[in-house]
Image (cartoon, rainbow, N blue to C red; front, side, top):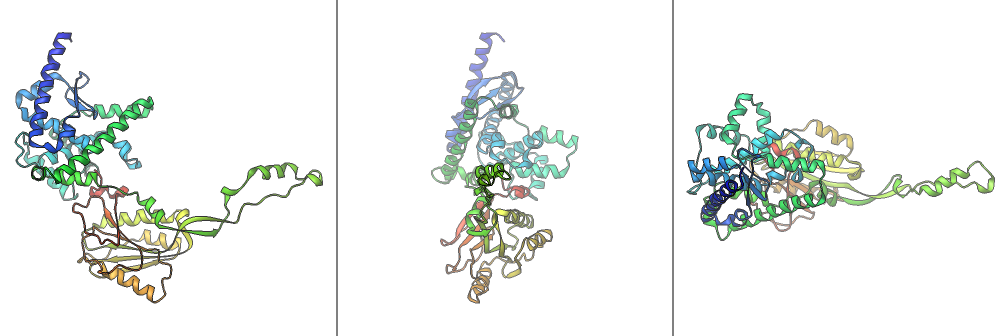
Length: 460
């Protein structure tokens, strides 16, 4: 491409992008930090548009054709790429290291596009964005919403995987929802795999952190100074609130929730191999050089669970799948040697408007038996008080004497006790809870993502 032609194309393209950016800004001022972050770079390595979080790369022929058709299409494509960045879709590997995510990147790309397009299609009264909700799209959204509480890329991915999409259906979905080229995401993935220079890795980390901060600012602006505009942005407001909500590491929390106790157990960490090896080298030779072998300590201090309770809300506001995954994740942590004492008492309680089911675990065998036969009972109203009353009664009767506390898995909406209980209480809430529950001040509120809760769209 001749230098003069290239410069002219770059000049025209930059004007198109700047015009698009300004139009979006006038309608969605809360996106200002995101809109003005991008620079624009001509690239013949793509037939479309794409971004790496810093630049928007474009094929000039494609961009001019889009603009000629409608400036609203360019605006929509600009926002589409911007939302990919806000929801961290580009940085999936850094964001989630769970082994289930080393999978089909093509399917992941499609899932991200569907998630973003569903947000754009939910906008109301944003005139600068060309609306293109076809009947086919409506049917896809409806099918997904029957399974997902919110349409996140991760949740959509698993649903599409379970649907066993045919090649023909795949092509139709891709044609309907693909807006940008994700080859620049793949380039980042290849760079990570090759473990390039530390400077490059630092730049990616800075880009990811910058978009996390931009998302927080946008979410705050939508709920404050630009609330009226934010209310017209459909599901974006809800999705950003979920995206920016602080996640807690459940395994780390459960370890902190545990108690410290000494147990009779070989402490191999305290074993000193130097005198032991020296003793062996002298053993069996002259009597004066014989040194007795040194044994390790017979006890060690470690974290563990002694006596506590786990309750789940079975009213129906939490799905059966989410409850099962909460149990599985919790029990897997408890089964580890470092969090399970030989003598343990764990009360497993299921409650809706009343206490439906209880089970007492006192050994690893009991724990494994429970995991093998998990059954959920309830699906009535939501009242947390029966669980607290039951535990207080056990304490009064002396059945429980060292109750560490209560973990209560719920969406947080129900009837709470009026008084603070005599034991520590933690309400564990799914990270995709759309409304902020009013948890009492005497309890801890913990928002958690569980690895397999993706079937209900907990991640974004």
